[in-house]
Structures are given as structure tokens and as C-alpha cells.
Length: 566
Image (cartoon, rainbow, N blue to C red; front, side, top):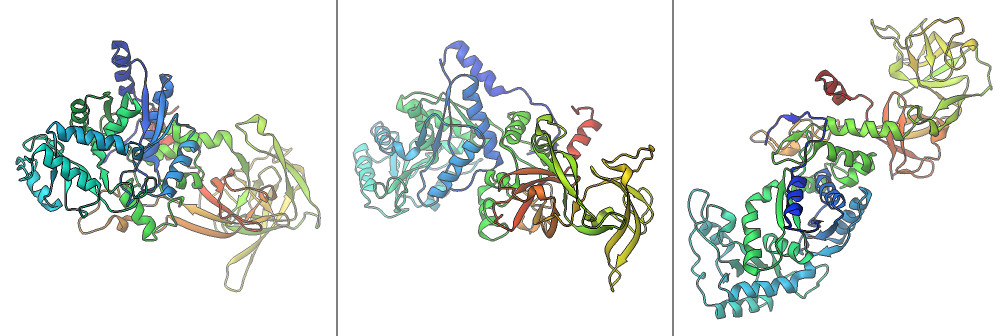
């Protein structure tokens, strides 16, 4: 895999659709049927979103159908929690399956087909241990050796396989293997295991089975049963395609076409379910839906929109070459989407108290604020203004350097939608910390412009102290500090690359009163600060916001520099 992030901002051609076009033109198929087949042993992540979008949108493009099929062939790892979460994620992305299927629906048919292969002399029961099977398998440079049990009679294999099904053997005591070619240069063709013994109840079939099909045996046959025309898989299954086709050919059943595409890899992100599970189970994150996680539930909680994720998947397209996509591209697409759809609000995250000394005590005015300059239909709102305000602490410097244009002693700035103010005094506590500013305002500048035409170089957001709503704000950053956390230096674990500053929790933030009734899942742009979403931890009297993404768009700047910006 290349470590160089992709920098394209336009969707490449879809080679999969070109193959389908040819199949339809030549009559190989007269319709299109796809499927999305996750194993329910964890939560879906943004890499799965690429596969979901590809399978469902391909079916839509050709007026076909797409099934959601759970590959529930390992009862030790699969849970209903994951099944429910996967269905929620697919729906959230905006797709609806035509049929909801489970590999376990086909256990009896798969068993009968296994018997068919045994009768044809193409499968046998092997009693080598798992370690011995690996040893006999050989290597990429050395052929494998045949198992001493490979040439049992059909009758003996049928009897042993039936005994396996009846639970007469312990786990690991025997397996069913396909009889193909132990000298094949493709290791997947060296008598692959079709069934193993697992004495554990299955979530859907209970104790009906104690033998369970391996992925390579269940997958292609499930595709065939469902009439899948195009089985779209990630690139690591390319070496499995000869086996996929061999099983279907020997059974003489409907033949789908397997097509492989490159999986999605993002900078500052891991996609391995094993690694994501470790992050959850070892407490590095707060759960599968932690907003720092690349899971769809985590992205949803962080404030991502399904529209942005679908647009991102469209832009990166599909290819046959593995690469790493810069996460800045995903954030750029998200900003573009949020900029169009979310309303603006003012929020002060690190408040500094400001007293306007010449403003009448007890007076409140209401300033007209634009909800979204990108959407005229969003209208306006009234924001209260009073004598005591909060501004961001970083918007004031007592001894400012050059090019700092915000508030400073003797300097005039604009308050968004309100007045020009000038700092006249700085109040400090006993330790010398600034605790309050005294300012004057110019009544003639209401609305933010001076009638005499004088200009200021900075506009600050603010919140009226008397009307402010208090909130907790969680600032999220990349979970990993290294661009490629999958490339771990020798002697280190991938968790050593975690970003210690991936979460900063701010309390006592001051928000404008229009946010008092904000509900979980609602998104806003906090002016000058970024895009935020209301977190599910919100309860009456305690607002919690998550930062979705900052306003700074490094990707857009990069594209403009390269002459690719829109």
C-alpha cells in the first residue's frame, strides 16, 4: 500500500460499472443483483460505508436489487447488538435493502451441497490438527503435502461428516476439506477447510448445528442462492476468487461474478476491527460510538451527515490500487455539506467578561442575526444584547504583537451584528490574571457599521451574560497522532501512536439563548469556532456539544494551490 495520500478531488471512472455494462450488453446477465454482506462481529466503520454505497448505488443505477446479508457463520463472535447497529447504519446512510438475509438461512442447503461434493470425491473429512494442517499446507515457495486422510472412501467421508453434524467429535478433532490441489501456487486452493466444529449455540439457529461453514464455503454459495449477479469484494479477496468459482462450477449452480476493488484507507485512522475492538475493550475510547472512532455510529455522534459520507465515497470512487486517502478530503466534503445546511449561532468557549461601561444598566436590545448566509430560507433570529457580555479570551491581548487585530487596550473592534466597542480598562485578580475588560460602545454603530465610514479590522462574536446558556463542549481531534498508525515502528504497539490531545473537555462555555432548547443530533456552526452537534449525553439543564470539524479547511487550500479547487 502506498503511504502517499491521494490528492484527487474528482470522482474517477468506475471500472465496476464498465464491467457490468459489458455483461448486460453481451447477455451474460439480464439484470443486476448485489448484496452487502457484513459479519456481525463489530460496528461498521467508514471503510464499510464505501462498500455499502458501492453495492446499493450500483443496484440503483441499473434498476436492480441489493440485499443486506449477515455472514453469521461464527457463533462465538456474533451478537444481536451488532446486527441491530449494522441495520441502523445502513438506513442512516440512506439505503434500504430489498431482502434481509442471513448465511444461517442456508445452513441446510450448504450441508447438502457439501455432501454432494463428498459424493463426487471432491471433499473429505480430515483429522489432522489445525497446526498439522498449517504445516502440511506448505508455503508460497514450497508445495503442500497431502493429508494421510485425503484418500478416504466416499462412504467413510459421508459417515464421518454425518457424525460431525451429530456432535460426536470435539472441537478441533476433525474438519471437512475440499479436495483440490495441494501443489497449487494459490494457497487458498490447497484443500481449504469448508467446515469446522464449534460447540456453541447460534443466535438464530440455537443448538441445531455444531458444524459451521467457513467464509469461503458459505459466501459464494449464499451469493448463488440469492441470485447475486455481481459480488463486489475488497481487494484482499482477489486470491480467493479461483476458489469462489471452483465451488460454484463443481456444484453446477448459478454463477455470480466476483469483482474486487480497493478498500478505503484514511490517514490518522485504523480500520481493522481487531484494533478498533481493542480500543473499546481496553478503554482508550468511550465505546464504539466514541466521536473519535471511524465507526459510522461514532461519526454520527460527532455530527457527520450521511450526505457528506456518500459524497465522499462518490469522490474517491473505486479502483484496483490500494492507497491512503487524506482525511482532510473527508473533512473538506463535510464542511461543504454543513456550510449549506446548518444554522449559525454564537458561542463563547473560553469566556472573558466584558462590561460596556456607557451602556444603560438593565437595558436589553435584540440584534437581528442571520441564521445561514448560504440559505435565504433559513431566515433570521433575535439575539439579546446587554451591558455585560462574554467574548473569547483569545480575542483579547493586553500587549498585542503585530498583525493581532482583535481587542486590545485603546483599540476598537466590531461586535457581530451589534456595535463597535473600544477597550478602556483591564481588571486583574490578585495573581495578575485578567478577569474582566471595561469597554465603551458607539451607539451610532448599531448593526455593525459606522455612519462616518470608519473601519475596524476585526469582528468578534459574543454572548450576553444575562441571557447566556451554559454548556459543556468537547473538542475532538484525530485519534492518532501519526498519519499512518498502521505503520508501527518496530518494538511499538499501534496504541503508542494515539494522540493524547484527541479530546479536550471545556466546561462553563457560554452560548446564546437560542441554543437552550437544542436537542441531541442537531448541528450548528458556532461562528468563528467550527461545526458542532448536540451530544446524546445532553439532559435537562446540562447541554453537551461535540465539535464535528473546525472551520479551517486545509484540503481546500491544498487543492487551490494545486489548481484543482472548485
